[in-house]
Image (cartoon, rainbow, N blue to C red; front, side, top):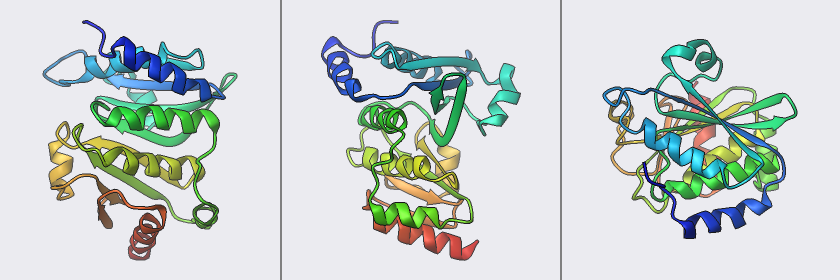
Length: 224
């Protein structure tokens, strides 16, 4: 398969990755059968090309069926899915940051930005948001449904991932809506970005600022 990233994009990403600080490991779970996973090969190749652009990045590739135990450890139940981990020596830290589906089109922006925040181990969130996240005593699960052609989706994905990095109570995953139509139907996704909180307890449509997502999280927790 020919390269997915042209030299111009590769150079831009190389320069962006100069800001990386600490090692990052990406765990990719896929399947070889195209009838099972239409975009697994492309997703794996995209991640491979991205990881070539910095010596601080490492990619591990697993077949979901052959590595069910490891997948369960990282709460992976569908393909293609990948997890972005902090790596310190032999220690891997799972911040709850996931991608379910290929981060193509505009979503490529969210991929490189989420790698950056994990590498820096710094969410970049406001003081007020950090203080709120410290008070969480119940788990928060964020699913941000996107499409590759949506220019506003990366901002929503990165915000969810920032919150996951900041708080061990938060898990956040991007979901490519067209690759996972059953999930999209389950949560009534019609426009994107569509953020589902705690498996449908609350929904938010559109890319909103930090305080609006916090409001929706608070409403979801009040219902749980």
